[in-house]
Length: 162
Image 1: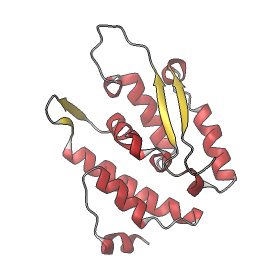
Image 2: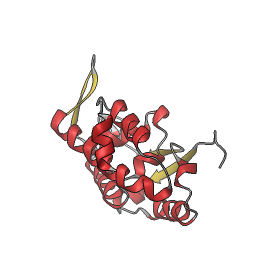
Image 3: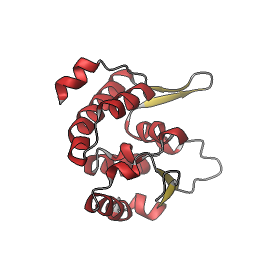
Image 4: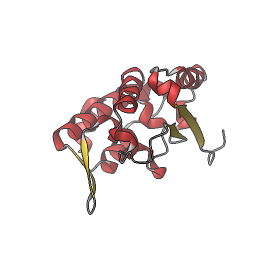
């Protein structure tokens, strides 16, 4: 995969309904086997194929079956957001699947503040522990994730996690 290459991972409805993570497990295992986590940073987009009735006004993040699939993904691979294409909004979509929120016409998505804080800190702790195992310095990545989700992290706090 070249530096500029992005890859779409298609998630069909049948996988969502059966909570099947097999395609992602295969991908993750190949990345881990090659110890190439850094080569795949921010390279993937998840394309959810979940047909809805024409009169169903829900966003994908409001569909319980899809959210449950993401809960399973996050439980098995809590560092998976590191692989997502943040510039394409994948981190925000991933977060919306796991953090309670509401949509406002004028203000956009509004996450539950306490739930978002727990989610962000969970990712901070997970990535601070996982990334060094692959020779990746986590501070700048962890700070970037937190900033994208509206949080500023103190360098001393991050250094204490090392």
